[in-house]
Length: 303
Length: 60
Picture 1 (cartoon, chains in turn yellow, orange):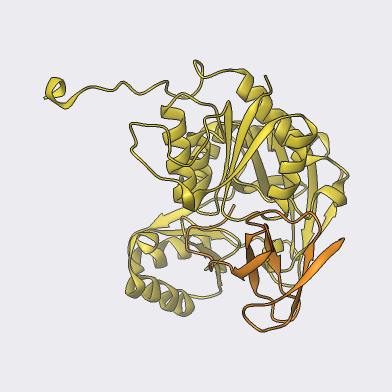
Picture 2: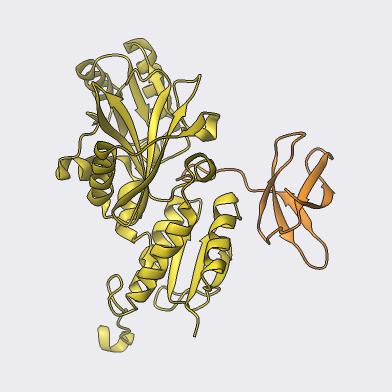
């Protein structure tokens, strides 16, 4: 019987289309499922999701990816990425703490919980600083702040907007990279490809127009990329790095990586490697996945 | 890209190329206005609508 897998996503982007082709080429019975159609009791398998051997979660929403991964793991089915990886990568504080714990070179990041606290941390780091939302991506709401007056405005706006995403201010030193950074792709512990991104803007997100080109994976890049991936729990991740003083420092680790601009530029079949990893995870079976099946206890017995 | 058909952008009325191997849920870009469009049906005919705007926790 053919192996079955589900690809959960929010619309089919070029990445999901490439992944679907990769699974098809490998003879996997693939179900492409829109995350917005799913729901149901947490004690049961998600309604709308076919019962499969493994699930690749690629919803655009960080929260939904986390919920889906935890839910599916609780039902004993392998998920890529694991919920812990999604949660660690989806929260910049968690990512930083994981990198620090593993001894992976990373930017000296700080947090603050008030306007005054933010000012103090920025003075300690030294201007310019970069202010980021703890949760967020694609370069959204990231600010490069050059002095205390501008920072005061940014922090007061965050305070006025309020809500959970602005409860914590996350600050990093600005790295003068010349509008260039490096992204490496790690699959199951191996750095399989890398690109450099060059932008006229200080932000180097390809979502904001940075141009990507292939980069040879040096021994050092492979080593630090694999170490960063291991620090967040492994799986399939993209590591963003800066070159500083001849070495690399990790900026961020992405748990739901995009690679539409990186297959032709690197010549590496990234979606194929991801599909192979999902197939290997599926082969580990339900018994060894996640936290194991959820025990169902009738209410009258539980109280 | 092999174009199977062209549809009218639901935002600006421009022409949107739909690939021959279009998938349900596929996201297409309108070259005229830059809107992201989502394929909501492929059988018997392809239909598109404006895709959901990015939310605060969307990303990689």
